[in-house]
Length: 50
Image (tube, one colour):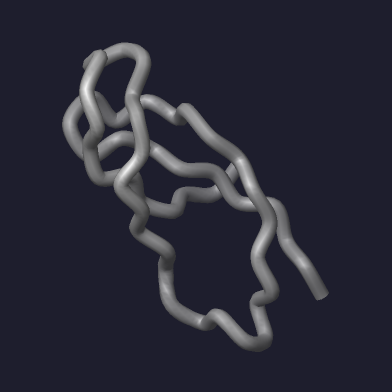
């Protein structure tokens, strides 16, 4: 049931993080505030396909 997803920075659009989520219980796209090593700041990261 769990599917691998990636997180991309909203500012530089680079993929920085990966995780998994349950597609049955979480149907929407995830958006988390995480550290981007390329921007060197905490930015919003949105779910993207791997």
